[in-house]
Length: 328
Ligand SMILES: NC(=O)c1ccc[n+]([C@@H]2O[C@H](COP(=O)([O-])OP(=O)(O)OC[C@H]3O[C@@H](n4cnc5c(N)ncnc54)[C@H](OP(=O)(O)O)[C@@H]3O)[C@@H](O)[C@H]2O)c1
Image (cartoon, rainbow, N blue to C red):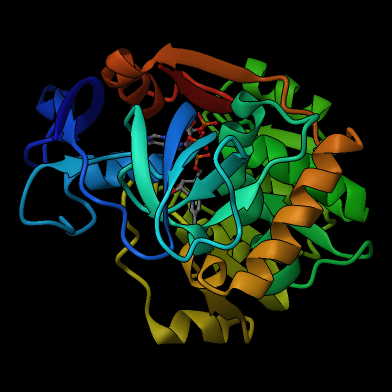
């Protein structure tokens, strides 16, 4: 069946934003445990750019529907669905297939949204917030006596991380690319924010910590920051590399870790998300923090789904801060 009012935004090959185009959705029968979601808001993430640009391997042998985060209503359920019914408000984070009016997905990859959380807020936070959850609880068990550096502090993940880490009570240093972003990050939990377009962040971190260095550095910028991020650590410190917005860092040598008996991990959300027990506990915790106003989601920039190319361009050019949501 081809339904003209149902469409997706696909990339027909890796490339710049000109590869993005609108395409009708061909709905198939729902399989066992699958549900059909009518998307009400769709999150934009840097991973969408990695796929579109060809940094990550093309996962299909056809047009790729981009987008990895969304929220909406259950419109139909397939056989043997037990967790949801038609009309339920839900959200999901999964690589690709989200830039669409509708998507079919296994119920195991979907969570319910509390009534007081809007579709925009859910789509702005389910991927980014669960990422923060595993970064601060699972990749590293952050405690109030820890000292932390978090790059790209004013980004979508960064603003949620600032608020979550403030709640833990750790001392939190951030970096951001201009003074407005530095100010915004300070309002969202960061104790100090270094404008790393103007100042060398390693020198600043050493000043702030009296040359002691940090327990953990969260680096999602990659190529431009990773080498110096290692030097920000104290002995036995942990480098959590979880992205590469400036490009992949390829120069790592095993002996780099020997400078301070460092630890290095390169986690990805979807390895945690695949564990349903983890997903239920983590999403409950995230939504609880939003409902209790410990995490504010008031910095959401909206674009029309049809204008997603503009969202990509702005994100790639470092013009955005906070979360981006696409509206249908
Ligand atoms: N591994 C995982 O599970 C996982 C999950 C979610 C997100 N991530 C990663 O987390 C990072 C943040 O994701 P997000 O979606 O919230 O994006 P974002 O932080 O809103 O946007 C990326 C930010 O990176 C900074 N940046 C530094 N150098 C850059 C460059 N050369 N080009 C573009 N941006 C540059 C910019 O902030 P400044 O201007 O302030 O420098 C930019 O705003 C990304 O690297 C993403 O891949 C990883």
